[in-house]
Length: 122
Image 1 (tube, rainbow, N blue to C red):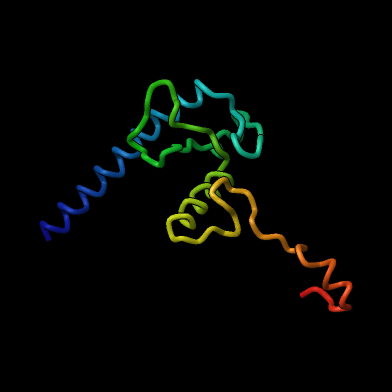
Image 2: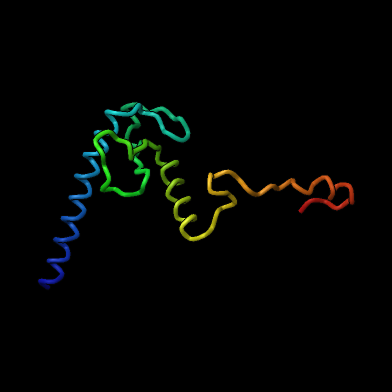
């Protein structure tokens, strides 16, 4: 039982430290940057500020320079999308995009020739 208590205490301490660290850089970022999502441009007020998150550009939550150069403010949706894109890139799946994030799939590339042959597009 002592091992279980020790593990619970370690997990609780780690969660508390992460929360404190997160509050520190979040508060700093909200003072430095305008309350606007860096991707979609959605504006935030005190009423919905909880939906604006701090994204670490290099994905290292311990890299928090005081000038905020490793942070960008993203709404919940854009932040989730950014992390999903990173997971896809790490797994080798490009999600139909090149390294710059531009789409590489062209659904209408052969449309003219298919229509000329009388074949409906898939």
